[in-house]
Length: 612
Image 1 (cartoon, one colour):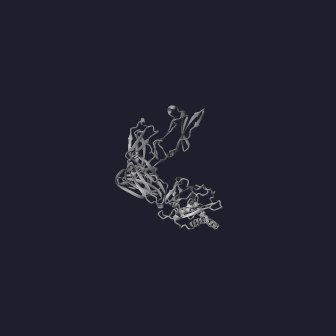
Image 2 (cartoon, one colour):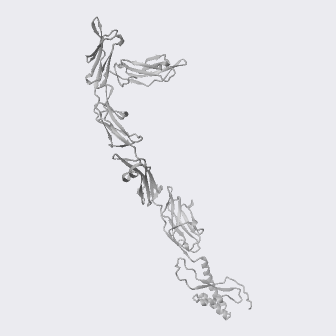
Image 3 (cartoon, one colour):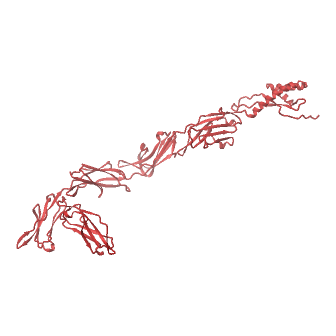
């Protein structure tokens, strides 16, 4: 359609064009007005480019409507129609409105007249222009141009032509009147931005407000970035101002954009736009590069009381004015530097971390440009979880007293509270961890099995003096992939006694020998006096350990005696006193006495000594 107007004025010319470009053969093109056929053309050739034009000259109200077109092509002797084109609406009004300063052309045509001597134009029935001397080549058309139009030219316009017949002027009837309304363009609005900064950040949102909308018949408002329309909205009423939120586009490097706004009103079907607002210039810069946040030690979960370090590293290419740390999006620390730096790190120390310090941590840095802080994007978040250590285990012993004789076995059992779970147990002696693999076969431990996931037993197979001491245990529990050590158990004390099973047997044998000695003494009354005296000394020596060493040695010389008529030989065996308990002081004086134990279990055969 040409020319393109939202509203056409009675008398104007409108051209409609239907093109079947790209089609190999076209047999017919048809126009439609409100779905009714109004004009067609057949017999096209490729040189026509398959284009058909429909002209609406001197448009009138009957030409208003919805227009479309369609073409046909001949396929095997039959016409095949295309789809309808898109629709175009034509609106016609008899009361056009013009804006002061525009150019208006009024055309008067005496089409059909055989002879025309002249044409006159009228404004509100007053002649304003006249032209004579027409000849047929001019087709009897005259144009009156109002340029630039002003409010003084508002009114009803008409025209007529005349011809001279026998020296007399014969005028035609006046044409239909065309009313022209002339109005001033609405005054320019005012454009402001919120927040008000000298510099803005790419991607952030700003609010543009178009105010001072000085018209009682406001129809809509538009915003522009440069010459490009970025927002348009029709308004049902006339507010004093209108606001819209925009996101500043992201581009490479810093830039400055020009923004403006306008509003419009509608009169006689025509949109009358206001003057543009004064331009508003917005300077935009990019955010600094994203910092990197690291965690040391790199655990997913921490135990109450541990130390945690978070380090924020800024790339060396970024200017720096300060660094901030956040926990759960709340600022917890901010450090400003007296001068702009490039490439820097700052650390946040959390000594003795507690449950209140658990959360998602992040950091950012900023630079100052034109008096405004320009923050970077936040670093990736690092979540810190804090938990109490697992509860204290229970430690028990078998025997429960903790006192065990040398050479016997000892079991120490560690039981973790709570249900089954993945656990590792550790035993300690005098604060040093016991590693059974490093101690050979004398100590072993059992790991938890499926039937008892919370118990472990430390077994000392043969207790010795070096096993005396204070024992504790603890366990590790798998919490979010980290092995967490529990609190230590209460301590139990182990004492290893120096008495062993061999010593007990020797004592029992000694008592048996003493009893047997007394019985033999009664039976030996008839022996010789020398043997009797010797045996008495032996018994006395065995019953009275207070005899001196000299007497003991004398007895040793004749210790071996043979009862007359007997196959049993008795021997007096001197035995040192039992070892002191291993926990006694080594400087303690050892008893000087010796115990003499007689064994009767040893049977010897009497052998006659050969004479010398």
